[in-house]
Length: 172
Image (cartoon, rainbow, N blue to C red):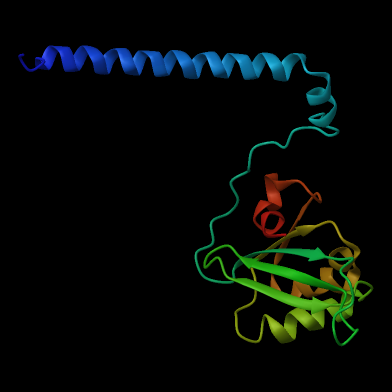
């Protein structure tokens, strides 16, 4: 009895690969067909909103804490001390550092400004750009005047749309 030649091994290997590819393609087509015709799949996979668009390239930060994304997470259960029910997520685009600031859902613009001033700006420099949702806490006259004094550009994004504020939205 002689050992099989190298050609035999190559032929067997090619047949095995082609049968695997055929099997994978067959299964892929079968699943697509089931997905397209299954009534339950259509009901459960129904999209109720538009598909999200592509991410928009934002201004590159040249130094830490120059371009910052901010967003609120609200509606949380009361904590152990029964005081905080939401928090602010602050995300630095340069260093990718995260800061979570516990706060109250009904804090006013002044409270939010003081919180950011005391907790974030105490260890970092003044921001040149803040990307945040259109929120009364950011659109109030107090914030407009503060941004004008500091020279900060406030860029608004729409809530739950990751095209502009995707960094903060992904964290939440």
